[in-house]
Image (cartoon, rainbow, N blue to C red; front, side):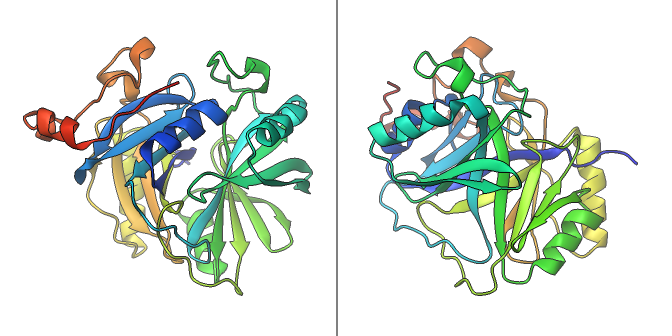
Length: 312
């Protein structure tokens, strides 16, 4: 069977203050700002992409920072926690780092035999670090966090579902995920070659209130596919199953289709190519504002409306 879904591609979240967002994910988390562009549907709002050196699929956390935006509420029908993979040997480093930065956290706790800690960013977005020795992806050497302790990319995303059965059916029957673990109402699925960056946890949350979107809320989760051809194949299967995916949209760095899974979470399937070096070289990623062609004629106005960003 042809592989149509590899695992995770990116997660996109709503945020408040732009500079706080940059300080948190570059300064605290040690991620690289791999692309500074705008929301293609609202060019007065940044779209910031953080990841590893190249912005590889499975490492990319992106944000729409709206400035003044009320906080959302975690709950059913939402991706509530994005977990990053870090080496087991980095536990003390990260506990000390969070303590020094006065970031409250819970844990360390155990889940599926792995140690993890949980905390939130300035807007309340749920973040976890999962400590493991399975992940062989390189981290980003930002000169502040020792490379041996750095984030490797995503480990898992957690989907809170009041009625998980239909979501599980979608993942396993159409999106090529396999059940690899079950623990306390949490079902873990893996796609592609498996391992960190390819896990989706579906958490049975029948007693949770419905989530409310706002600052700190995940807007959508994207799954990786290899090419335009594999994207069209999964689009056809989703259509046949009644999910009404969108037509293919050109997001400059990948091509996308979107649809709602049965619990209401917005899913995307994004192509791996062309990638983030399509409009700037690897060494210059994230240093200048990149605009889609439809906004280039308005560059001066767009730049004037966006807040300045200082990368420390």
